[in-house]
Image 1 (cartoon, rainbow, N blue to C red):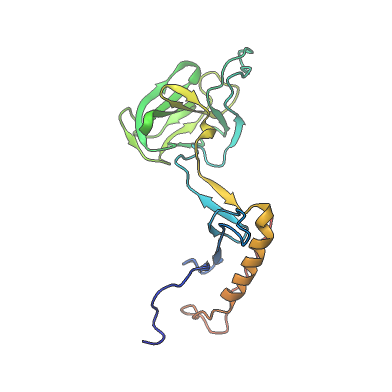
Image 2 (image 1 turned 120 degrees about the vertical axis):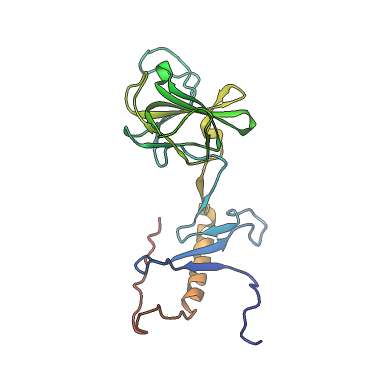
Length: 237
């Protein structure tokens, strides 16, 4: 039947309107792979108006958005003992009480006080991996040895127990019993359109915006045909 939807030939841009009428719409654009010369460009996928593409890694950050205060360093000068002592993990600066989440699915193997590490949780993961969380102020309700946890499940709260100079989470990863740098794991993150392709992306976005603007939309339920939504402005970096 003429006028009936059959299938998508291609999908180049999408505008999403949230259920909340006061929330602005969001547009995403298909971009990437190779240009006409065959040179590599941004990873193929969907990017927002600022050229960003979130992705999920195999691991999660235990304290989202926290600043890294100290990195993995086998030759670090210990700030309390003032001797060279390996720093077998990453320190996340965060206030006492900030939530700490499991970095991946696994089984809790240790919960309790452990000397210089202070209050500690250890979780065993698939592939001979385990994660360690130190200096905690307290543990999540119901946390116990043998408990299966999911990624991003609350397990504890940041503190300053044990041998520390201030509140933070010490986060370690063992592989086969040996500590490795946690930042070598693939965590959640954001891909960004490379600077060399940014002009191409901006031109494509402008062209797709023009096409989206030309698509007639039905009036929202309960609103008059004359009512229009305010224009959403995206600030470019």
